[in-house]
Figure (spheres, rainbow, N blue to C red):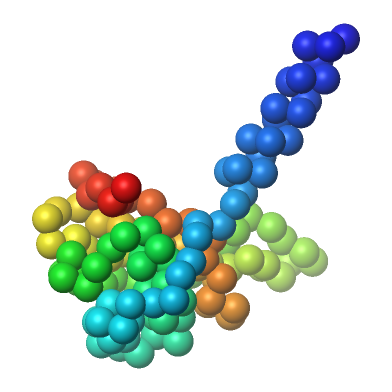
Length: 122
């Protein structure tokens, strides 16, 4: 019986770690200004800049910004989609991209990860 309880507890711990939002910090002013300019003034660009600042990414590392279409978070309630999220794909100067997934209504950052060979500092 002891191993089963351990597995259940471990499952809850892992679920909590996976669902945790990435850390945020006060956005670096240069990074925030660059994201506002590249995104065409996206209302969530300062919050995205805060997540990137917390991840150790600086303005000089970002070369382009592409906003993916809205994607459903998977829940439906009476035919109404909930948890619609956007993905900001930030091309990195050294290659690859950093993807920031967020909710456009609240600007809450859901995920931040590297793709196509990009590496997150630290």
